[in-house]
Length: 360
Image 1: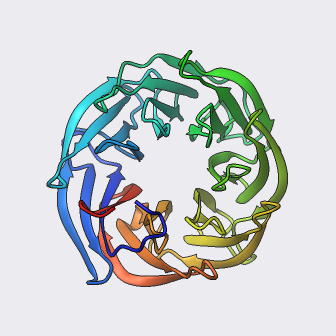
Image 2 (image 1 turned 180 degrees about the vertical axis):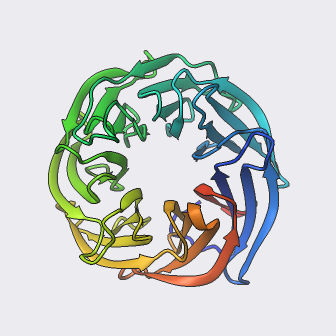
Image 3 (image 1 turned 60 degrees about the vertical axis):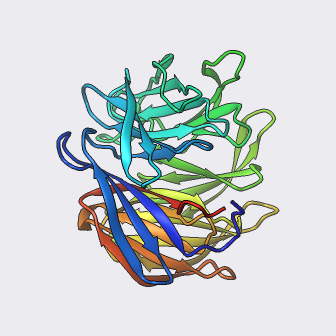
């Protein structure tokens, strides 16, 4: 679909923290014109499906099973009825997978294994099934924080816009590691890294639409680092660091999600503790950020958020208040306006939005 085409109805998929025999994945119908947020279905059989990604071409959803032992990645069919059905699952060597990514061709899947301190690589088959893990790379090192950085903790594993590299922010070692990958040799090869200041705790990253700039959200010191990114060489150059919180924020704050808006003109970051989304304007030429506002998330502990494909709405997963909140995005200023469209979901950790069937 055209990303700037406006739609009014969407299917919303939510991953949560849940027991194996309890509903962990949920599907909802959202019609923003009618003000409807209606349950469709739920899925059991996956413990802690805390992060999700969708196949770029097939009606398949992928979920981690964030477990200390018996960790898995799971492929889920998105049926024409908008119900969900498990296709297959594969064991993950690293424990506690908390993030996964799929490349733009739908041939590779990566996971960041927070508890295991590692990164895993899986092939995706033509039918969307997940093949057996082909590689698991263990990180080494520690950081300055006496509790959170006693060992490596990769928190994301993201394909860059060229699909030739996977970037891994490691919260435990204050590094963003760059791995190279090719279709000819589907393995991750270490190519370099960005060393962050001690005690930073890099968690997630987001790219500008043209791939020339990237943004790192840092969990341990509540900052965002804006960087230039050389997509030809995979080199990251930090250019600017800003706080994610306002001056009177609580001392205990842990940023979580980060995303660039569909237009490429604004960046959003969530704060757990302050329970807000921070909004920044992006200078397209330099990649630098300018603070715009903070907006309360209408809930507690905004672990993750996403935007509708047309860029009109932002949805926030408030983990500790058990709700998904929805905000209208001003296309001119990037500012967020709360809407009445909310839904109760137990311990939501990740939210994904797709247009309803038949829209293009």
